[in-house]
Length: 138
Image (cartoon, rainbow, N blue to C red):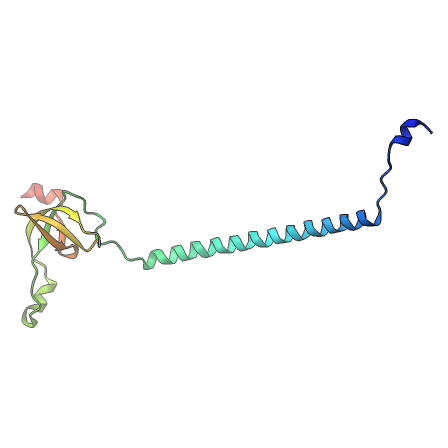
């Protein structure tokens, strides 16, 4: 024999190596199955999140003040009383006071409007924006 052939060790699989190879194959196949299941679960969760986001956007409370900015000219409706005889008139707002929007409170339901130089808190549902065309016509 040549001295080169003597130095080369021929690896023959023993019982332990065959068992280890089988174990590694089983672990790899199991990990592949687990990753597939994780991907499916993540996909289902993403679909569920998109569905919930879509449904919640329908039921989300609209903000009361989404078009008003500081310095916008507004008209304020009169605040009628709750007298039974005059309650039907509450449905017919008569916008009379004009002012300039100063700021909106934290709850988005009331705004501070400057009317005749005085800061007055006004409910947002009693305000209406004066359009620029209406200002030009006056």
